[in-house]
Length: 317
Image (tube, rainbow, N blue to C red; front, side, top):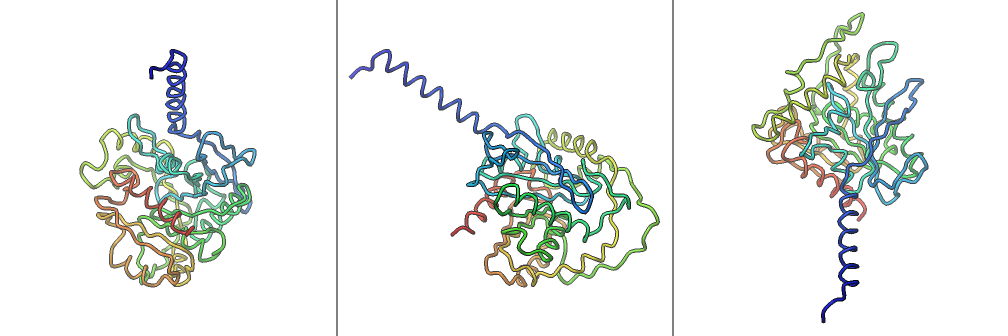
């Protein structure tokens, strides 16, 4: 039976509307920023909702969308690491997790990005972990639901220390680029009178990209430019012997350990010792084939995002 012109026009309208809605849903969510107070210091917190109709400002976040808080590494802040925008390439972990249904938060630690140093000029492991705890509490209150904590590199150490001290602050922990051995002891360093405030360099910004062909040269150039703009001066840490508090046997929380196959900082023997000491049976260890320390921006980026999604979904069973 032939369709009438009106029927054909209606079907065409429905197809067009569906295409527009699909395109809308795939667009990157608007980046928003908030200020979180932690012990009298203002922290910059970035946010992208899982869909554009959600608004954390009016407590209208989609309760079916889980929260995840991202912690950056030692040298660079949240936006270059987690929301890198390169035309024609989907490199933003925030956007990629949005596509998988997460409400995504990212914190600039003291001295990074848009979070100023405090009066001392230094960050410390204990100070950083308290800042993350206060941020988790803020997010949990704001959204009326718990949060998964994700730490990359130095951020993974901050994340572990936070949940050792405050095990109920998050519902799960994800560690990626975890650079420490549980048997390692860190010696106290001779403290400088003043922070060094060294200038960051383009060479340092590009140093994590070690697997040939895993990321385009254009993307590396954009990353270097964004990193130096966000963090022209290297943040300063002291009292790093406080990392000796890290103890896998105290992490009684669901945990996902992500390891880049060629990550020079995340070593398999160290991971094996760490993983075997975790007391909670809800644990996974996934190796990202072809990845290095910056796999979240490289070829394995989609597998990394889906590993996060699958882990969080697995916890609900």
